Length: 181
Image (cartoon, rainbow, N blue to C red; front, side, top):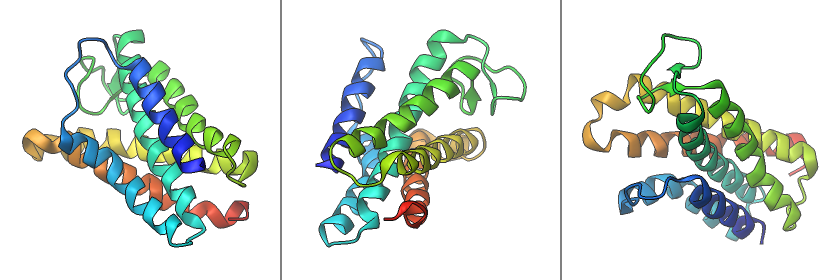
C-alpha cells in the first residue's frame, strides 16, 4: 500500500502543478520517470526490505523535479544556473530558483510521508532520509541538465530524468539501514 500511496501522490500533485495546455508526456518520458521505481517495486515484491524505500526515493525525485520546475518557473522569472550562477531564461536547462527549490523540497518530503501514512514503517526519520535522497536526485537532474543534457539531443531530458530518479532510488535504498529498514 505504501508504494501505491507514493505513486498516487506523484500523480495527484504532479497533475495539479502541471500547466493546463502543456504538451502531454510521451511514453518515453513516462518510462524514464518511472523505470527506477518499477525496478525497485519488483525488488520489494521479492521481499527486499529496501525496495519500498527505493521506490520512495525514485518517486520523490520525480515529484520534486516536476514541482520545482513547474512552480519555480511561474514564481521566479530570474532563475540562476544551479541556483547560484548567472541568471538564465526561465525554463533553461540547469535553471533553478529559490522558490522552486524550496517547493521541490516540500514535494520530495510529501512522497515518503504518503508512504508512511499508508503503512511504511520508516517514521519521520525515514521520511527525512528519503526526502533528502529525492532532493539530491533533483539537484543531480539540474546539474546534468546544465552539463550533459544539451549533448544528448532530442531525448536528453528523458535520459537525465532516468539518471536522476535512479540516483534517488539508490540513495534512498542505501539510507534504509539508517532508519531501521
